[in-house]
Image (cartoon, rainbow, N blue to C red; front, side):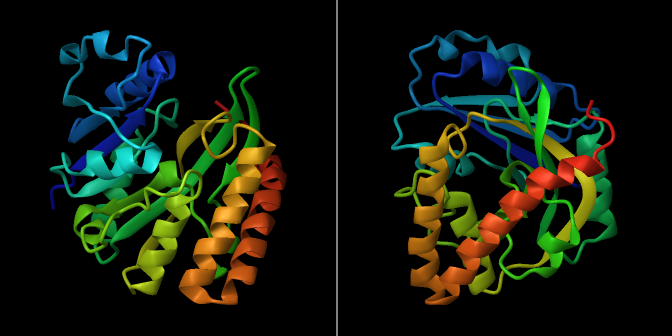
Length: 256
C-alpha cells in the first residue's frame, strides 16, 4: 500500500515561521508528500520566497476570511489521501516523522484517522510548555480534543463533511471538526505513542488569555448545538486536558 501525504500549511504575515515549517517538511526522509502552502495575501513579502526550489511544494495566494476559511480553500488542492495540517511555525519532530507515520498507517489500515503527540514550546527560550495527545486520557475519555498538527485524516473522510472547517470560528474550528466526525460516525482513530509535531506558543488559539477564553466560549456554543447538555462535559474535559498537558511535561525526559 502506497502512503502519500498532503501537508497543508496556511500562513498570513509569518514569513520567518513559514520558512521554518518548510525546512522541517523538506528535511523529511520520506518524500512521498505534496506540501500545499496557502497564503492569505500576506504583506511581509511571503510571495517573494522562491518556492520552486523546494521539492514537492505548491504555493497558492488568495484572499480568505481567516484561518479556517484558508484551510477549506487549501484542501481543494490536495491530491494525496492522507491530510496533515501543519501551520506556519509548526514543525515535525524529526526527519523520520513521515516514515514512522507511513509505517503505522500500513500496519493499521482499518483506521481513517491517526494521531500522535504534540510538544508545545515557548520559542523565545525553547522551553517545553505542554505535551498534548499522549496518554490514555485522550484515547479513553470520550470527545477528547486531539492536537491538530499531529492529526492525520483521510481526504475521503473530510470530503464527507459539508465543509472541513467552520469558517465562522476563529479559535476552535479543529475541535468542532473532530466532534462532527464523531457525531457523523466517521471517527475511527489510531492512537500513536509517537510525538509527531512541535508547535510554538503564539498561534491563534494560544497567543494570549483572551484567545484561550474565546476558544472555550466557541467550544461551549458549538458543542451545545451538537450534543446539548453534554457540552458542559466537553468544556470541562477540554479544561482538564489542558491542565494535564502542562503536568505531563514531567514525563518528557529530554526535549530535542
